[in-house]
Length: 301
Image 1 (cartoon, helix red, strand yellow):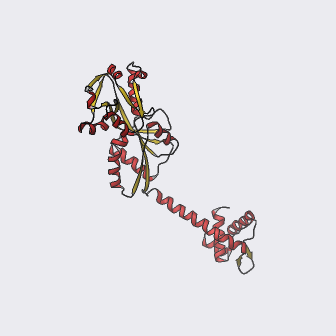
Image 2 (tube, one colour):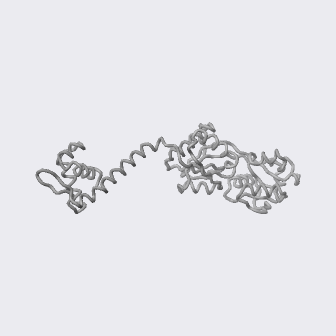
Image 3 (cartoon, one colour):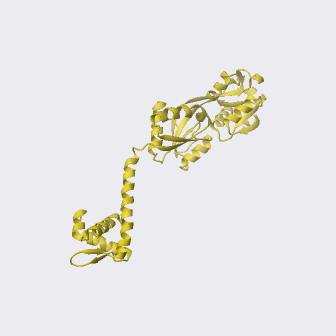
């Protein structure tokens, strides 16, 4: 059964004539007859009573006619909606962002984007970079912002900007503004979870400097930035976070920021997509907005 057969059936049923039906849908009468014959054979029912003067729909044909009309209407509606799809930027946009971009970039991005597209609602999920990459690969998320992209050809990554990590501490701890690498092992650490891009950057930098990261005194691991900040503010331990996250707390006197001498803690923030996925118009509009907003003209991975 195909659409041409169904359209032929509807036309004959309405016009009660094979010749009139053929003219109405621009087919030859033999073609119309062939479509009807094939349809009757496939359904194993007689759709029309034929005589020399006119063609009448059988009871079975009248029953099938309702379904046939619904099938064609559904097809036409689908075509209409798909034709409008590429120009329809609306609905809810799901964005997953790791802690640093979620706290420092997403609020201003959404503010600007929603001004341009006020009909869009947003669902923002804060996860670690590893979880977001997995969601993108599994098609559970269209757009992600992360601090690490890993190594996989299943992801397309677009560098949005640079980020620097710093050591944060409570003012009561009197940690100097510049601290030697070897002095890190004197403090208790409040660390992000293992899939965190921030933690990965910090630990890889220690290793590249010949230091044994396992000797860090890690008091606890926390997967929520607000909770981590509260632990550090209380003087329970120190932590490593994006400089941009710590600035507000520093200006209000709640935290101190220290630079670790000899340790390169520079990393990048990336917008990531599934390399095999076609974005919805809404997600594509957000992607293009980000590329323009951050003036991305080359795409390092």
